[in-house]
Amino acid sequence: MVIEAVPELLPIKQDFYTKLSAVANEKTIFASNSSTMTPSQIVDFTDRPEKYLHLHFANEIWKLNIAEIMKHERTSDEVFETIIEFAKDIAMIPILLHKEQPGYVLNTLLVPFLKAAMQLAADGVADPKVVDKTWMISTGAPIGPFAFLDIIGPNTPYNLYKAWGDQGDELSAKVAAWIKSEYLDKDRMGTANGKGVYDYPNPAYQTPDFLK
Image 1 (cartoon, one colour):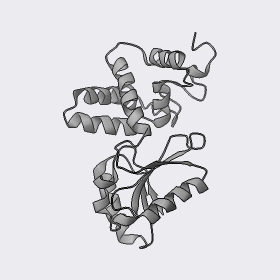
Image 2: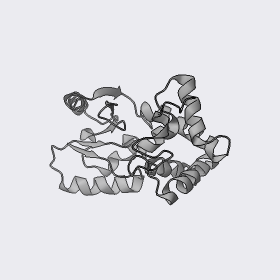
Image 3: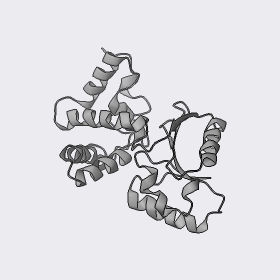
Image 4: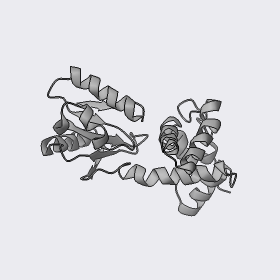
């Protein structure tokens, strides 16, 4: 099996699978770790539609151990079951999707949540740390949306919202511009380099006084 996790840009993924198909053993299963795309967007660039599906892991998979498994109409039942068993073997909890859904279960919920949080910041309504504090106090969540964004890193959300912005979604374009100016242009890549909305390894949201 090959699990692909190249950047969340469709042309890059399509080119990758064209090249992979030319060199991979015919028995090899292809599994994309795409965060938001569906198998149908990519499968025709593979030479094995029955052995192609999506396998998405949450960030920090060592503790948030779900494996979202999404088939398409040409994925064989045998391959689907094989990947379910693989997920269990590596201590993941399989989350089965029987229909194609952009964003699976997790990102269908998470992407608009993060977008709403960043809109509050981009519009100057509330500071990112205030947004996180509000969410954590009000819901009992251990982290807020901007802490989660630091864990994800800015690249994937930026590529996603910019693509939607390029298609005419003005709010997505505004959010992408905010990510660029506040993260990318300042080399604040979240937990990857220790600098995001918070500074790591001791982010402010983990301090006793943060929720006061």
